[in-house]
Image (spheres, rainbow, N blue to C red):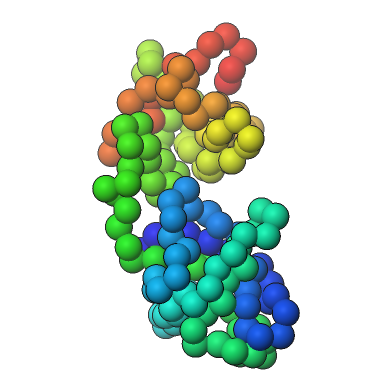
Length: 162
């Protein structure tokens, strides 16, 4: 299960929703199935139409034709079961492969825990929560990010970075 977006609001009265896209892959395509979770219940939808509007996607699901039918899904995350590992290029990672991992320097000095990947115009920043509770941001690029394995991320810091 991959978190791919978040329904932020309805759009118009014909059952469309605004979705903030959390995926770097093409996961919102006509005919694709996505779902939301309400408690332990999985609610699956088929994408009928999708278009971009500023930094959001306007999505129409086949199952809904009225604003009142989709209001209960506002604020929920959208998921997909579709594995896109074959679309990953070298040095590409799933969000879940990074978040929650211990972060250490290339000298094996513990820095903290990866808490988020923040998208900026230049790429992504790795947000690290240090043991003292303060946050550090490291550009998520080859010059600063070394190996990422099952339990840690090795960073290559320069003076003043962390």
